[in-house]
Image (cartoon, rainbow, N blue to C red):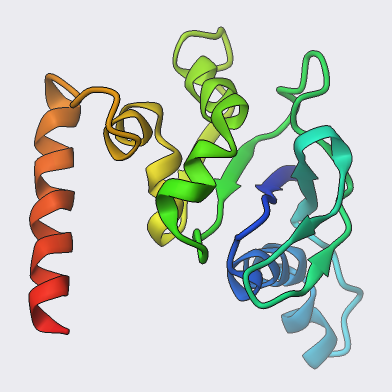
Length: 161
C-alpha cells in the first residue's frame, strides 16, 4: 500500500485537501463496493501539518492532522501533495518558510521513492517560486523559464478578469 501525505496549512482550500484525501482513500474501494466485492484500498492517506496542529482553511473549516511533516526523519511517504493556496499567496508563503525549506530538501536528499506534487497555487511552495513571490530573488535556469510562464499566465488571468 502506498502512503500519500497531504500537507495542511492555514489558508489552504479545504475542498482541495479533502478532495485529494477522498480520491486516494477511495481508490480500490468504491468500485469493489459497487460490485459487492471486498474493498481493498490502494493508498493510505494522512494530513500532515506543522507540529501536527490543526489547520484552518480559507473557508473557516478546521482540519485535524494525522501528524507533523516536520517530525525528524519524516520521509516515509511515497507521495507528498501540496493543496491549493486559498488565502493571499504571499501571506501564506511568508508564514510557511519552514515548509518551503523542508520541501526543498527533497531535491537533495537520498529519497528517490518520495515524489512531491502540488495542486494549482500549491505549486508556489516550490522553493524557487516561493522566493520569487516573496520578492527575495528571481529564480535562474530552468525554474526561471517556469516562473516566466507563471508570470505570463497570472498576467493573462488578471487581464481576463
